[in-house]
Image (tube, rainbow, N blue to C red; front, top):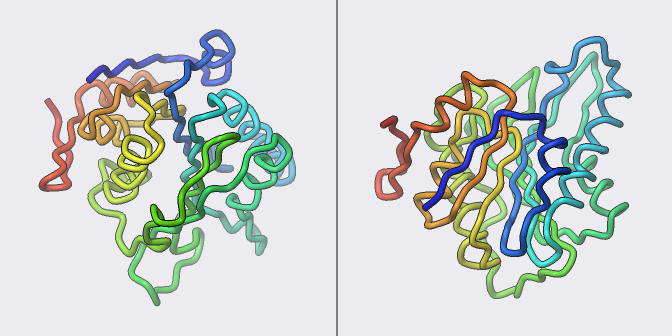
Length: 220
């Protein structure tokens, strides 16, 4: 399976490289902490605009999946699931499912960030047969490459859905970080393409592999 990596601005790259049919997109967009000199309200607008651009870049018969954790800032809860749904509604994309994956064991209190992560799937034309429904709550994240990385359980669920239910042949991961999802996508037989501005993270994304049987990551 192919793995293509690009060190570039995500939106400039997508503008110059339209995605072909058979390509689904999984995005975990930057957090408020990664934006300096930006107010919380400005961040919400930027986040929604980024979501709109990613949705519009996805071919109409494929899917866009957002993997996002909410934040709490100065007593305000910022619901990223709501923000991506607002973007999808504005651009005519339907919600296929909304799942949550536990970041800590159920019943445990967290403070700066909620105890779960949203995973939401959208499409313009693809629809999902009710008989293909799967669990809405994933109780464990699984192994992670780094503290802010995507857990193996969520990555496996998304890659399997894209491969087996949607029928896409390629998975694009903007803001691909250290390559967790790319490795899982390859393991499930998908061609993968990652875009990341950090050369250090992108170097790691070249090397990481994933084994489905053990649900574990390794480096070449």
